[in-house]
Amino acid sequence: MSVYTPVTREQLERYLQQYSVGQLLDFQGIEAGVENTNYFVTTTVGQFVLTLVESVSSEQLPFILNYIEHLTQHGVACAKPIHLNDGGLSSHLNERPAVLMSRLAGSPLHTPNDQQASIIGLTLARMHRLSEQLSNEQPVHIHQWCSDLGTRLAPLLPQEDQQTLQDNLTDAAQIPWKTLPGGPIHADLFPDNAMFEGDRLCGLIDFYHSCSAPYLYDLCVTLNAWCYDESAAQYDFNKALLILDSYQSVRPLNPNEQRSFSSMLQVAAMRFWLSRLRDIHFPKEGEVVTRKNPDGKLQLLRLLGENQRLQMAS
Image (tube, rainbow, N blue to C red):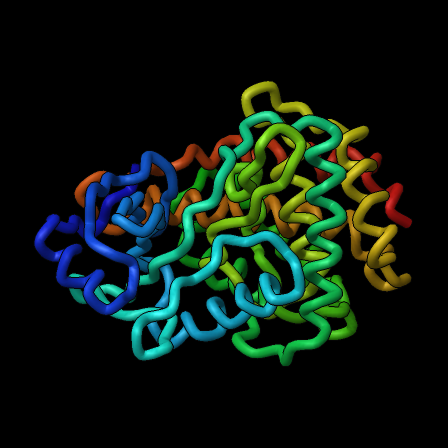
């Protein structure tokens, strides 16, 4: 569990007065998440999730919350932000941006089955189609982000890892980033951010990585997250095909995306390898902090560099 900013009962009771959600009954820290502080909140009206946002600024929140509202208004199942009494979608608690969301039914996935993977492919494609209706606010150049962070981290890495980083940054520079279709994306659609009851998707959570970037990047993040088993160092190529087929039944990849597919899978792996390294070498202070081992993403990055089986998207 990551709790960077602890909250007392008295503080939470005062905070909830900004909403029409009844009286506080109980709350507890959520044993998940890495970058933000999260609590389950139970009131006389229902169950909610409170997030104290540590990973993005309050200026970025309107983009994220408006994106979620756009998706939910068009039938994509997501945790919904609760409006304050003044109509706003976020406030502040203990000097942190704070958001109260509906609590979804279901549980996060650990080992997705084929049906769940197929559903997520369809859902992601629908999200990208809906993003086409929005402007490209809050853009993030993924290659530049990786390059900037890689420059800070490189002196701290073994020589072999430095070479892996440099090779992947060079390959990423060859992607025609400006020609790839893009818009608002989730950017962090791991199985633990999808709540399921059996094979029914109850909704998606944790949009705090959302930005405007290529849809292909979002797809590749999802493929790596849903199809690579870090503990076994194995990529489930059959599951990847299911996700791809489902995705392309709604939004087929164009020729530029097809040509960039293999390289973008490596970019997606590199981005999360670097972010995990950052959390180890440049940690944030917190009361209880969860950090993920970067070795799994490094193994994935090297596997993708050696294996071309996922070029089947073309």
